[in-house]
Amino acid sequence: MTDTTTGRRPRGRPRTTGARTCDRCGRSTGKIRIRWPDGDICGICFHDATRAHGSCHQCGQHRLLPGRDGNRQLCRPCAGITTDLDCHRCGSEGEHHRRGLCTRCTLRDDLNALLLPADGPATTEAARIVDVLATVDRPESIYTWKRNPKVDHLLRGLGDGTIPLTHDGFEEAPASIAREHIRELLVHHGLLPRRDPDLARFERWLQERLDSIDDPTVRRPVEQFARWHHLRRIRRRVGQELRGAVHTSKQEITEVSRFLTWLAERDKTISTCSQGDVDEWLAGGLTTRHAIRTFIVWSGEQNLSSELGIGFRQARSGRLITQDDRLDLLHRCLIGEPDTLAYRVAAVLLLLYAQPLVRVAAMRTEQIQVAPDGLLVLLGKEPAVVPEPFAQLLREHLTARPNLRTANTSGNPWLFPGYRAGRHLHIQFRSWTDCARSASTCSVPATPPCAISSARSPRRSSPPNSATATRSPNGTLNSPPHP
Image: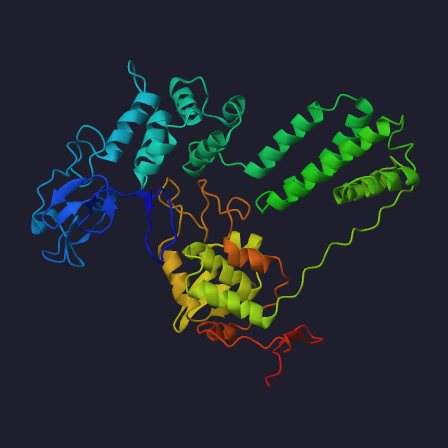
């Protein structure tokens, strides 16, 4: 059985019911974690209390505040709490993790055992890795993460030297998310030289793709097209956002290899291919087969094929979102739906300024400017006004950006920091809330910033036959006529 809270979305592991009642949260529980002056405390309330730091409402000292007096937070002496919550090594206040030590000291001990040799001096690099991981703002996350067998193997290899601290050394280790996370963490902290990770992954993928092609009549043109066309273009764009270009290149190279394999099965090559062969290939499969168009054009320019042609595939156009739809979505974001602040900010940037989610995800904090009369956002040559109440949401987000408590803190420039060190959040890595997904399926013309004031309060729903928002010939948004 589970005990849920009315009016609140269930999140995480559900609490179990029991015969005991926590005097702090009032919920039923099977076990009381500890008894303090304000009553019986359940495990979750104890967990929260031993991580609450701030200024005591009674004595004013800045320290751990596990005590409660109504809504006031108190330190241990003022609350009359005698529980030992001091780390026996560093003296910091918090819940003991192992044998009287805090989580940070426990984590450092475990990292020393993994990375530093028991008999002999430790390398400077290994000691730096320990410091990087042990000094994060939230050591509990690193402690849980390192229990992954792949992470354990990588850290042990870096410690004993079986995995050299180089990019080539990492390439020799089995491919995994953990490997890339550790690599980018070390790059972020200067323990590995910087390189473009998207370019490196594309080069590795390309070599593996070419090695999987046995027929030389297929491999040769695929390799020429991939290296001379795609790889050269991607290398020119190093330093820019490459994920979209890499994805497109992979798709085109994959479809070209399938097309040339299909030709080889018919004893043909790109030089003997006819327009009928191209048309037959396109008609016999999914629309992704149109991705060979770039190759067909390129092969003609390189005199590798006869005059072949493929028209542009007509993409499906999404419906134009109406002003009522947009204000409804803005209202949902401003009142707290969804309840994740970062995703609400991203959704409003999309809805209010018509910015694609890819561009929103790659925004930097320097694009938010503080002016005497409010906030400005730089999305083009001239900054745009950030209206209230969105400006307040943006201020709250800037002071509490996510993913900055796990070795990703130093000099992170992104408005939406990613899960990996030094990277911004990727729109396909995690959903950007139902508001953003709903809006992203439509064509979103820019909304005048003043329109956000209309989204603060609920509006009357339009009659079924009422006119919807339209676009004028010059591209501006015309509101529907009022009855």
